[in-house]
Image 1 (cartoon, rainbow, N blue to C red):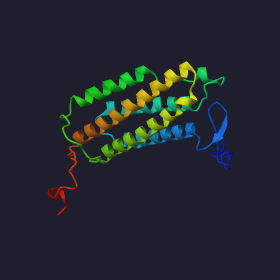
Image 2 (cartoon, rainbow, N blue to C red):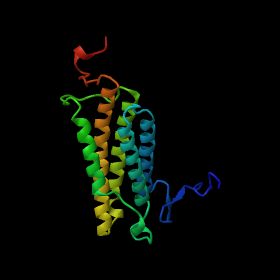
Image 3 (cartoon, one colour):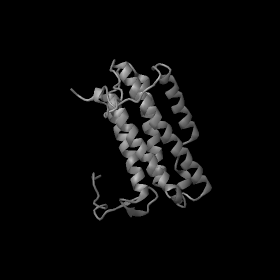
Image 4 (cartoon, one colour):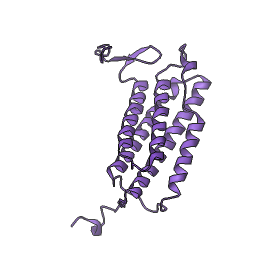
Amino acid sequence: MKAYTGKGDQGKTSLYSGERVAKNHPRVEACGDIDELNSVMGALISLLPADKSDLKVECEHVQSVLFVAGAWLSTTADSAGFARVGSVEKADTELLERFIERMDAQLPPLKEFILPGGHFCAGLAHMARTVCRRAERHVVILEEEFSKEEAQVRLIDLVRFLNRLSSYLFVLARYINRVYGEREALWKNPRSESNLPK
């Protein structure tokens, strides 16, 4: 099987349900964000602390859920295969909340803004968080695409999951920095003379 088909050379692509649409179609934009997020998650996983296998399991689970989200987003609600495509569920968000609470309990309270960064792995978690936020915005745009009641409910579940995932990734970044002994860089007002670089 070839690694390329050439079918997209004219700026069109196929949805999972078979329809041909422009590559800048809102569904394709949202799926692209989900795919990008999954890729950043993969890079993040490769740098997780070796003794924190629980984090790898969690992140790989997130990747699997994102695959489901991508398939669901690329299947139109009136297509024959829509009922067979899985979707993100409320339980997926509840699981993320448990992950967040476990890590957050081991972190000092956050009283100031922090700058994204620290250990490279933590930086990737912050990068994944921003891609997740973009995916969430593009999924919300699709609300009119899903007019059926079931589809609307599933869309809400996906938006909720992405919203919670961005929180998970923020807490994960802080947790990774703590594990690696990296100091969190606090935001300083750049207009204050005392904060100007010497």
